[in-house]
Length: 318
Image 1 (cartoon, rainbow, N blue to C red):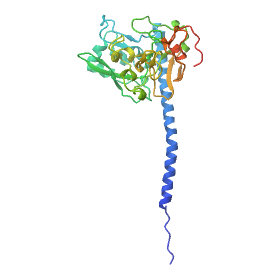
Image 2 (tube, helix red, strand yellow):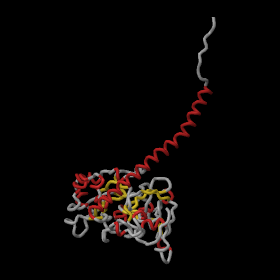
Image 3 (tube, rainbow, N blue to C red):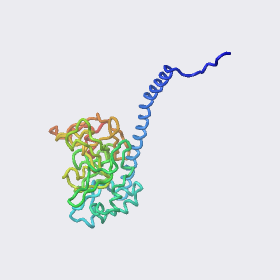
């Protein structure tokens, strides 16, 4: 009587199959991650395009661009109750009209809104158009609190600060004590000037040590002080400047990544230009510290000039 033989895998064959599967996964995983990041980069780019369209619609309505900050004109004559962000001004243009109406920024101060349970919930609501999908930071930005002796709250995070220029108030989105910019004021051309950039939340590993070296992202809501101090609560949460080198914030006066542009994308940032287009700008772009030369305007790098709306110098390729 013949015996039937049972077919099966030997231990060696099984180990070989497992090893092959492991190699295939190791080869496939980076490709999957790259595909996901490519999708996130596309979504980030689309967010900035949406913001660009909103700024153009705002300009069509008011013949000017919003300011970095604005305050409740009817209820804050002294300007001491906090400042609303430029991004709040364009909420109706990004299909957030109900949010804008509920905040009532023309008569309700930021401090009043932050002190009210119902409106504070709105101020802590993440808005997709202001978040880079590659940034895994928290939805509420505790690094940029609205802090007083009687109030300590945090607002929803934004990865897209407006560009205030190379040095302060030389760009498209001006600070509260300056004249608003119209498109006709952008003498270098809308396609040659950054309107909005990116900023990451995660701290920079090589530069850990001081708080200024961390980007901290920003917020779409506003800030406590329209001016420049104190650092945590000032309008650097709402704007950036190209005098601070991309990513690490190095400049002629030190490091301040809180006021520069950065991102979680490999190799650079997305930037919304004044004409509504979005370009990916390499972190290796020509950059020069603003005060390093006797004639800084003439010797600015390409990155510096992208922040300046009217330096009257040829920009070149970037």
